[in-house]
Amino acid sequence: MLLIDLVFFLLELCALAAFCYWGFKLPGAAQWVRIAAGVGTPALVAVLWGTFVAPKASMPVSSLMRFAIQLVIFGTAAAALYDTGRHKLGTIFMLIAVVELVLSYSLKAKRKIR
Image (cartoon, rainbow, N blue to C red):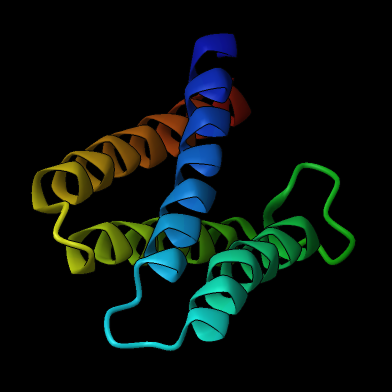
């Protein structure tokens, strides 16, 4: 389970990096908008993650809602990579995220059954 948790944490960091990269690469935006998006988007996502998804979340949600939030955040991060022209990277990120989410939740469900 430790390996799955480690991969999950790395995915979280990669998602924040993807949002940061997307923000700084906004096409046609003024420099101040790119800076604000590059710093603000990952900060907003980190606050949402810490509030609802993190192990010590201040407002924990049900497992199904947590899964949905994680899927939306990872999917949006993949879309951000895709939007910046990093199509293969976005696809690979999303595939790894989906496999990780399925493994994580299925293993947690098996542990609860036992």
